[in-house]
Length: 356
Figure: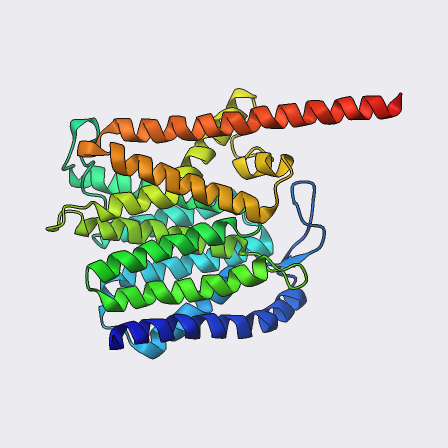
């Protein structure tokens, strides 16, 4: 009971401190011009402070320092490199760094993580392969981290979406750490949960809105994929439940599949895969007239649906479960796109009738 009280107090403290510091950081962001200026691709009309990730990072760092975690050494490489990603994102928010520079830093921190022993060591029966060589572990780990981080960054296009996905991810991390009786790492999870809830309150506000920023998207996306890989070390425990692989699939299946779909579509249209547009699933849902809250809820529910599919069809970690998830997502997307075409057609007919 005492431990649960401490966890509740830690989460509440993170929430309160974040709520207090956000108004101050809004003022600082305006003076430093650390804001997101609206353009043709943006859905907002005024400059919004890009401080969500910075606030979350600051509060969690402060409270981790005060608490003096003993188990922090386990994930110290993840913590250190995640704050490098936070700094990288902040510089990108301010100076709009070249994609090549950001990719280079992501590759470097991914290699550091792999060298620290936090690696994907198995394909879990995918294509009939289980244990893989050390070289393959390094390559796969670096590839998975960079892909997941960039995919997570790309879903940060509407209010509440990236923050909600990250928040649910840390809730899952918190639950897994409780099951493993690792209360110190569970406390880190609850610190993130408290800070993210405070961020979401402001992010969904109309008058005092803030954005996560590239700093927050890179920071949280990187942390989530790295802790997912870290959790895979519990996959062969007595319970037999593959915590790590399900954690990664739950958090990143939709962002990764949507990113692959968008990149492929751009290439097929003869455009650069890295040229920004409004082709992501949340953009299509916006065109249907859904609010940001409804879109976030829709995508979170899709995440849960795909997680359930993975859970029931992942027997022997078969490749078929991934294919089922992919086709489930594509089917839902095709339905949304068809609805968009129908909505546009109705709008065109009404405009033609008005002109007459």
